[in-house]
Length: 114
Length: 112
Image (spheres, rainbow over the protein chains, first blue to last red):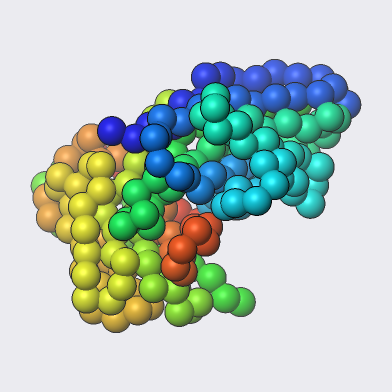
């Protein structure tokens, strides 16, 4: 069965420090990869996506993620975090092309401290 | 404003009662989905519909049913609620190919 693993359930970090949120998936076929962010009491918002082409993708608010096919990873990074980045982050994968639904990881809570 | 509307926002429901969670989208997306979100488990797919008139089972379909009579609406029904169905339920939609999912704001359901 397809699966997505987010190894860290919580990541505490100080403001302006760099952060990496890890995501690994299991699949032997081509995939589409996504990161979503969820702020408290809200729905999920798309942060960035990888469909094809350049393996490094960026979001408008400074996050980036790199698709690594050999390691089946799609880690999310930001060189300098802000208090406002405090949220839950979900990695998601679409592996079954007959069904458009995404498979989600269990989430990583990013806690940015002053 | 285009998007997905879920209702109700929250609900407390007695076990054994029937409940329908409503979801409507105005983006003319072909595909729609229902997920449940539980702490430490992320989002798990309950049911999906690739196009109006068709539905499919996700990872955790037991105890839930859906219908897709038209493009815009995708209601989720709990025929006889149980406490393990206490969760936050998200409806989502998407177009074809690798397009991302667009999510509603969720329904927080508590079954007592």
